[in-house]
Amino acid sequence: MACQTKARKLHNAGYVENMKTEILCTRKIEFDAAHRVVGHEHKCRFLHGHRYVLEATFSAPNLDDIGRVIDFGEIKTILKTWIDENLDHTTILWNQDKELGSNISTITNQKIYYLNSNPTAENIAHHLFAEIIPALFQGLEAKIKSVKLYETPNCSVVVE
Ligand SMILES: [Zn+2]
Image 1 (tube, rainbow, N blue to C red):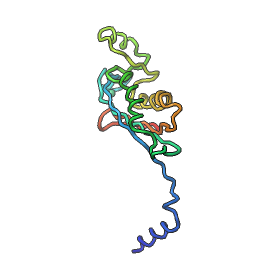
Image 2: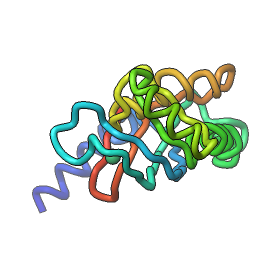
Image 3: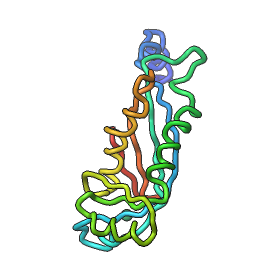
Image 4: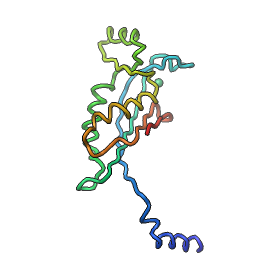
């Protein structure tokens, strides 16, 4: 009873209505890629693959005329297209690991995606958050708010 009274008082005082609300919009995009983590103490130093799951979250100062942060389809068109063309079924390597990259591409003819840093989930997520996504969505009202990248169903990183 006491709790209900307190809740009603808070509501009547307008605290609930005045709470700052932020609406976020997240699109999930999955891709397959190989990588290796140079200097890793255990088996992640070996070339291996992941089914990466990227969750890109956007915010906007205002919802658009029909009530959206950004259309889910627009994120898919822009970001999934870029992922498909640049990361999906590639090998993601540190640009200091070019000897491995050249050998792979010589034999398989596949594209190697080089990062300026060791391709940990943290560095891949940060690259997407700080460089790729802002460039892709430049000029749009919605801005990237956070990137969550799963390397496995149990292991993920967040950059925000
Ligand atoms: Zn890995």
